[in-house]
Length: 276
Image 1 (spheres, rainbow, N blue to C red):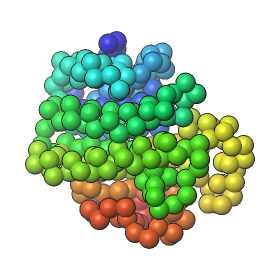
Image 2 (image 1 turned 90 degrees about the vertical axis):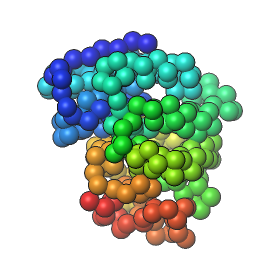
Image 3 (image 1 turned 60 degrees about the vertical axis):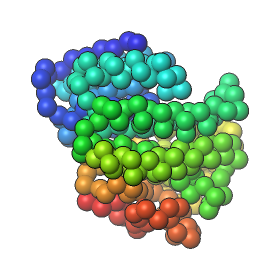
């Protein structure tokens, strides 16, 4: 377990743990929540300490507070060490953002996607709940290909990820009654392909021309900043438990026969991304 901290001692902003926050959507969400909500940020990373330290340095350099904490989410011992460090530093977790996912890595074994995208998400949520006070929130970050899995076609290279992330979302939604009993909400953020992310790069590598074809089909695909803003809203905005915020992909919403689950999942217009 490695960590770095700085910022304003005794700060009272919400404590936000973001998994997979050393780059991309996670890193941008961390910066937004620090700047806009005064959040105390835990930047979780698996291997890339230098990148995580860079995110922390940017936040603390702007006057915010942040920790970089290493944990492979598929390793319960590392997750336990990370949560112990959070408890020691700030005592609680007000928002848990489940952003990390995977399964397209070249060296990933066939069961890795399910272990990370379902089992590890649920395991971290269960373990972190003991640090989460009433009024806390869990945010699950997913994709339209996963959220609408079984209702819409899935790119073949992404199928294991989509299937396992849908399983992860289902498992978390099944926890809503238990979480609600503890005063913890669950909000989901689902997006189209997000410009500039590693997943989109890997998909384009697996099937050249795929991303440009999607741009042409949808008119545009969201950028990292746009999606991160939706995740930040999910973290601190006024949304009921079970709510889903959609970003991009209006064709998914128009073609879907209905929400995958009836528990307060909304299908807003492309311009309405969740309730205020």
